[in-house]
Image (tube, rainbow, N blue to C red; front, side, top):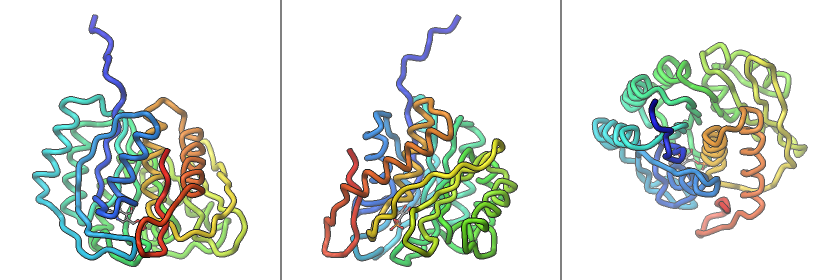
Length: 265
Ligand code: PLP
């Protein structure tokens, strides 16, 4: 009989670094810490960034990325992986190979493509690799509406179109989709849709009129942390959306720009 594994659950983020501390790896690790799970990181890209935008991007050698991922799986009990900024197709292919080899139970994919400031965080040519290599390995895909529109190749203009988009995104191979509704026009509540084989649930929050940074990274990381803690998918997503809402309520402006970063607690 093998001894029970005494190691606490770890969550690994494979994503981009944000020197401004609001999004990416930095937001992910703060979110993991706030959820009481051990956080690991494999840095797929580095951004020079502040509250007014991205000033430079550097993508390290993919062999080094693979070494970071392997080092994490060799020692820690990695229960969930969160994927964020992956920069290009070469990075996506290396991440897909690593996931095939290590087969983590949960993979949460935030399909980061363009920053709120307009900077491109994924090369346009990499969309195909994301769809064919990562979506079939994904437990939860967390696109916002512009990202879902790029993945599906058509616009999503209202709540009915969001429901239809969820069904279409499920056919790409991901087990579940958390489609974020914050970009729908109007000043009513923000409604996110969680879709899986059991149906579609709505997650509703009052809209906050804030220009915030790092909400997508934080939401996906909170979902991954909650799954690692053993929560079922609907509770993992609902609690993650509540966490982002609370973090926004405590948000603050650390730089000269108008952008608010989240208060992780
Ligand atoms: N920088 C990095 C490294 C990111 O991973 C992301 C988003 O996921 C962003 C910037 C963009 O964040 P936002 O669109 O919230 O400004």
